[in-house]
Image (cartoon, rainbow, N blue to C red; front, side, top):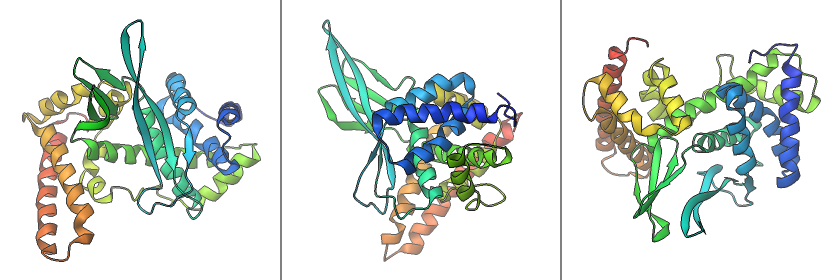
Length: 314
């Protein structure tokens, strides 16, 4: 759908009405409602009107739970509980989902929007083919990554895949895309005053060159060429949204021509994140740890460069 001044208000009002509808159920405070006015139509623009049903289903099924406690590390997170129900002797597994938003009153509008988009984007990219199981284990997907549970004990994970950091890098890039879409609404003549007031505030917090998130800065910087690659990003975004992420490893390795290159990439990114996260606690041998991060970063860059050079369309 191509937006213009002739159709923008019908488009925006459609999703304002949708947010008002879910607000009848969830009773969000007005500032959260106004933020959702901006977020929901931007998600539709990002993923396309053909995916409207999936996007709206996510916002209907994943409520925002506002926590009164403060967390300096996490302003918001996507929380799920693995559940099951038995019907006619058949056990089916599903999740109960929510976005937990910790005390946010000291945050700017832009920070609040960034956090909510980031977590809802995880949710949107996990809604299709979210849970699978066999006789022994149950697996829950979050975008690219998986958490596996023993069927006899759903309260504790027995395995976590090593592509969580790549999932976060891609999710951060998409968060930037969606915030820039929201900012682009300033180019239209929108009549809803509440929508315009929020847009006006946001506009002055975003640089002329577009929004850049501070999340996962080092890892995103290392992978910036991969995030710009016109073969990698559309393919992975589509497979991730559709829940067909098991195909990514073979596809990536076929392009690099090196078996195991995708696993090596995701493992290195996980290791860099752990090293980087613990760096501020390090009192001794800090230079040694920095050198380790730099060495692993160069390995990541080597893999990214091989992939990029082997792509016909980049």
